[in-house]
Length: 286
Ligand SMILES: NC(=O)c1ccc[n+]([C@@H]2O[C@H](COP(=O)([O-])OP(=O)(O)OC[C@H]3O[C@@H](n4cnc5c(N)ncnc54)[C@H](OP(=O)(O)O)[C@@H]3O)[C@@H](O)[C@H]2O)c1
Image (cartoon, rainbow, N blue to C red):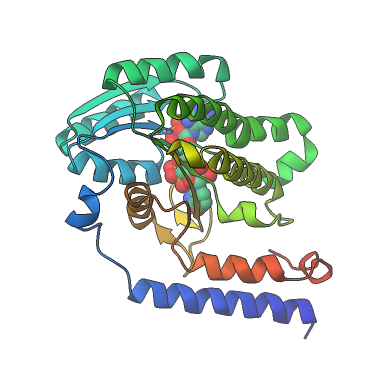
């Protein structure tokens, strides 16, 4: 058997074992004590990409806490359904804005609108994204650029504006959903992975810049999650539910953990993957 096949097999076996252990130890939703931590309530929460399955699950937790929400998404109909659901679930206030988030010229005005509607902002969760078609991107720089605009540059624009706002106020939390895909470029997924690597590095720098300003910057790195984004993929043992990952996002935000793998076992998998020597890694088929 080829050495690379053995290594890929060993990584898959490790990943499956970790996924099994993690699932058998799955935690219930955040406890009341954790819920009460960190912010006076109702918290004022902005969510960009609010129709994302993961973001919706995190938003349900904030709604259950009676928080105020400002939701941004590009699809007005889906946004309306999500907003109505969160009102029923107990949110103190739910406001919405319809925006394609690649339209960075409108970011500043939309954030001002959110701060005005909620009488300030405490927390911003950035969740939008697209799983790039790697084969199509390889044939088209225009498509690759579009994917970078969606998954990287639009995030850079939002985080720049939010960082300056929160720095001036000397408070606040910026949480962004990056991905384990950003930890190492794989041949099957490197356009999306490069965009997420950019997000992760950008957030790391912003976190350092704002460390003394009392602003928390959170990088969330989910592994594979069963959402509309991955609807076309075959689901294996490594897939987590949107519900468990969304609750993990909420917990990270209210506890202020700065870099979070969801589920946590992905930290082990990615530590192994990051350390595979390049001459072997380039031959692995994943
Ligand atoms: N699912 C996974 O396996 C996985 C793993 C790691 C990281 N992530 C990340 O998790 C985040 C949430 O994804 P998800 O899994 O919850 O998938 P999802 O349900 O498909 O959500 C993606 C969301 O991004 C929105 N979006 C895409 N481009 C946009 C744009 N230009 N302007 C405004 N909204 C836009 C989509 O809006 P529409 O509904 O209008 O299309 C959708 O609501 C993404 O950042 C994703 O990269 C996902």
